[in-house]
Length: 134
Ligand code: CO
Image (cartoon, rainbow, N blue to C red; front, side):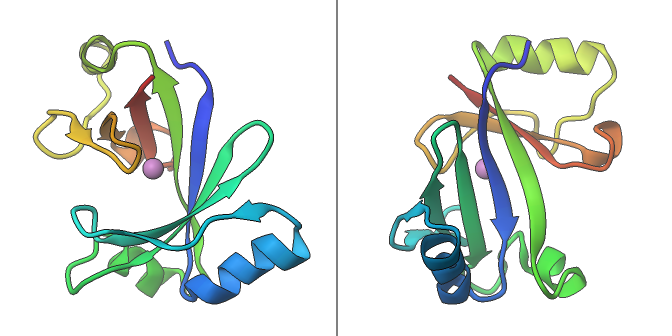
């Protein structure tokens, strides 16, 4: 069912420092920070030959990653995102196999303008999984 790895999202306490690390130390192509108010994060996109890394940092009072950073003060891998051909078919297949979809189970428009869903990390070896319509 799952296709390509679309991105790995890393929550970071200092967006400028993390951008500089990926740009200057690791030599990657790094975007300017993009505000995503509907997701409560700033995102910096790091382009790799085969996938993307997204550096995410809290935006606003009720950012969904604030608690994660409070627990992981140096930052850490927040979620991984796999592409699927048909997000509703994927959701129904996952639910039929006992996986729990977060929220109300309806896809939302993600950071790339495509429908996404998040899956309960307890059902996926402790990793928050995002699926994104291809
Ligand atoms: Co994501």
